[in-house]
Length: 241
Image 1: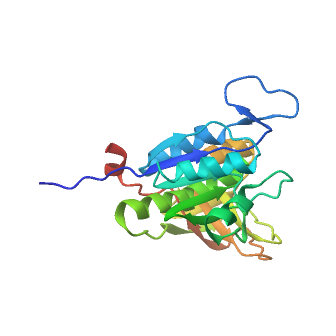
Image 2: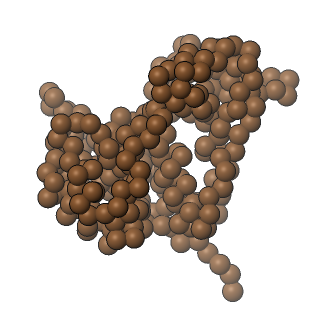
């Protein structure tokens, strides 16, 4: 007799009239829907069983039907642009009408427009459309939700102390600053990105360390800061089930 982990079913619902499927042509005024590709891989890595719906139109009835169908086939539903301020974003109105909104938005960026709603006992997480915010929300909150569904608890995010090798400017909102982490003579060093010689996208693709910067706080080169490692120690056995 032995215990096994069952992958939680995680359904992603991309929304937006301006979105077109990944891999095809992109007409003027449209954007490629790429978050589903990223989320599929991340959910799988976190221990979930991912699935993706077709791109939903910006229509309240379509969104409502998809959500009510989704909660019957998934343990966690993730919906794109869940708390955006777009003129045609009806997601929060729909969620208000069918569930209990627990979190309407976050006080941090990237990923400010993230929401959490309980619909008939199933968590529905809204994530922002921009890939950078969607990635960070996935690394912190989707990962934690899957961990909670699997084990019934959430482990603290691992962290280390690191010496800054560059300045971090103050911002008008709490900010999650990505950085490149290295070790020199047994001491961790962090370079805030974008790193010289690399694009922001290249840095984001290799993002493994984050410094949480409170609103209005400026950090200077040489300071020692707390650096979180959101992707550290993902249980190997979850990936094998």
